[in-house]
Length: 379
Image (cartoon, rainbow, N blue to C red; front, top):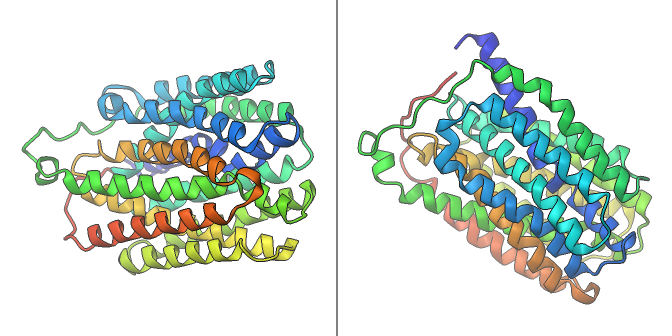
């Protein structure tokens, strides 16, 4: 693959990954609008979000079967249309069930896009570095989106998601000549024959994302409970994305120079510090600081978590399940968070999130000690 074609493929994959993750990154804003504008409870808002992630999970979990049998450009175009249609339909309904059903359609597209993006990047020579570029693109798009949407209502916010998805469609032409390297036949790759570590890495990733989504979904409510208004919350959330961008860009510079153990533990310690920080009396500066640390820690650590999966994956098919693991965690997290945060008490939520982070980092730490495996890489 020529360097020019390789860069175009990476750019397209980063765009697909950013669009596939936008609803998750905008989740605090959407949860707040569901509650404040529509009058839904925390539990109802959490269930609506989980409907999106349920279909996201189904689409990405099935990628293990279809990822090597489709043309990424065409599949990406279909996924973009699903994301565009879902939020548009959501503007036409008012009931929790109607919103959940409409966003479920967008979840199919999101799962497909992110699966395609992670599968493409996991087969590249510098997976850690390129996952960092993917996460940086996500954070940049989310920062711009959250900054622009501070004063928007729910309908405008949803229509903007639809419009951004349509803008990505022309970019799918960059993948017109790209085809996945076929997965290795069973038995020809030691990692394919011994896939338990890859499955365990995906489980650890799911647990981590369950903790992250349970907290991230209600970050807006934690700030609101502390007396911050919608403008303050919107500006803090958009600025926090820049910290996430910095974390992802740091990965692109470091790559694997520090190994994986140190970055994984540093990100976990930062995440646990966030759980302590949200228990303090909040003003805007403290809320911004803690939320920025959350955004930095998850984007810095997540690239290395995905890198562990890619290293333990012999043929790229397990890496295509990274979005499924994240989707499963994101599906369960908001429901759990809504149940634990009922009545506006977030202490139990923060304690549960801390426990899940500890379990996840313990799993990744054990897996990251395994010898590195050699696998084919495309550019």
